[in-house]
Image (cartoon, rainbow, N blue to C red; front, side, top):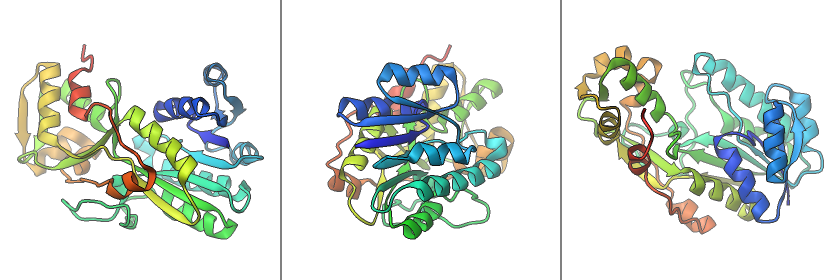
Length: 296
């Protein structure tokens, strides 16, 4: 198949492009830099210059493609609302240029699925719809897919990790490094779902190859939930700083905007995804990758 990938030179996109090409697919990757272009060429992908806010470049990149996979999102959290708006516009632009009957794949997060604290988020749970959470990739994708007659796959990501990056966890590590202590909130029993990078890239390929008609939602989850206390203890050992429990009232002072997530229990299931795709993650768990990370 011919696949257009945004975020093709990013953390997940780099591995995903390799997966696709190794499986015999033709890949066109979006990049805004010369370095990214060289990376795509070296991988055997076609280079398409542009970026997520250049909507004309997105539309032209879709031409002649069987599948579009949107992996791009700016993680500048100081401009989170604007980045969320840019993501919605990009998804609609990509979908508007894709031929009816083709597949649009968009990326969301397990933390963007509805459910209160402790609820095991399922693929069948609708996306959260709250003014305080401006990211709405699923809603935008469903709208454009219905308008254009597209098949749609939504991939919800947990904390995707290797020994270099781990989703939001590096922000916890950064706070520990700056404050001289590794912190969890309360008893630290709240959990974050997780999955290893290569397993996630493999899942995206299976999504491209196996998604049928209509709308499908997948959870790229290897571990349903890793406790924040275990995460904080592992970071504390790596940085050689004390591990401390703080009250929810003090979380904002320590974590900043991350405080809400640092104290939230967000486990997620992938039972349906595994059955639907035949996906069996085999990589190391989050704690193993955190243990093997270079802290200094």
